[in-house]
Length: 176
Image 1 (cartoon, rainbow, N blue to C red):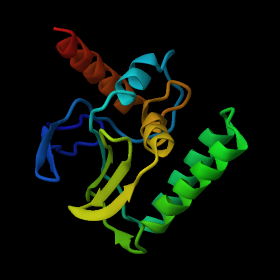
Image 2 (image 1 turned 135 degrees about the vertical axis):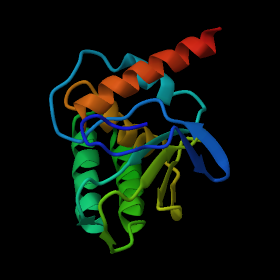
Image 3 (image 1 turned 180 degrees about the vertical axis):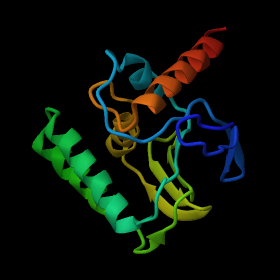
Image 4 (image 1 turned 135 degrees about the horizontal axis):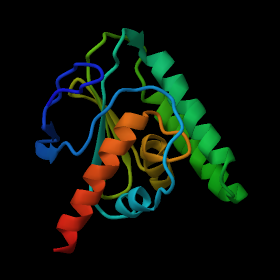
């Protein structure tokens, strides 16, 4: 499958942990405003399914740059929510673990990161089939993926539309 915006080719199926997963959406990665409601994505992420997002940098970068962007995003999502002091403490511990899982290295363009919200609620990270570990925190896993699915400024508008359509198809299949 080829993304019309970037001309990058993507596999329809991903093999993670010897399990095949189906691609349900893709798009280019630019910041933009977005749609109206996150209910469908929240509903899916609350289910006991593995849900993966494949990120492919379109230019060379490094893990520190990517990690810092992910941390800013997660900390902002945390600030935007009403959380108890205990919840904040637990989430900050998970964010710290997430940060420590990023090995310092260069990241060539067109390489692959896969972030998976596991059916148990953790966030599993891999780069080019190399396991970066799993952070066992439901808030972190859900909010990381929601940053790509949130109508109020997703990481990619095109990906959000395409993924939302794929989620809708998936949910309709589950109802049959």
